[in-house]
Amino acid sequence: TLALESFEDLAAANTFTADSFVLPDFTVTGNYTSPCLGIWNEPFVGGFATDGANWLGYQTSDNLTLVFEFDVPINTFGLYITDWGDFGTGVLTFANEGGDFFQVAVTPQSNGNSMFFGAWNDSMIFTIVTFTQTITGEFYGVDEIYYGMTSTVAVEAKDWSAVKALFD
Image (tube, rainbow, N blue to C red):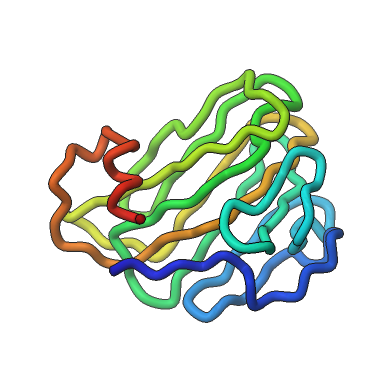
């Protein structure tokens, strides 16, 4: 069973309040004009919660990162991303220090979009997940983060719809 973080234990301010949040199993850090992260409990410029009421919003710019640093090694990570890619032309990528690298999404995307991304690797473990995006002034939301260690998956890792079923 994978752990789930959906920001329900953090107070929602519905504005940018921090550059990082320390959660029970990981720290999430954004880099941009301080503060660049906030917890919302209502829709904001296309971002919204996918689980419960609260969600993490990130104001970013080109070639900046959103980093998840886990307290213990994991081999599985997945999350919902809302409203990415509606503010210009660019790509969103995933990387970890184990060497996995994926293109998560490309523009154009519609305002208020929602996508799930998941990665699983049974041959390596990692503690750092980095999302990098290339759109100047982009804002996006993150919610429903699944993570942990799994030993078997009965699908090919490139079949993200089937990998998402692992997280349900």
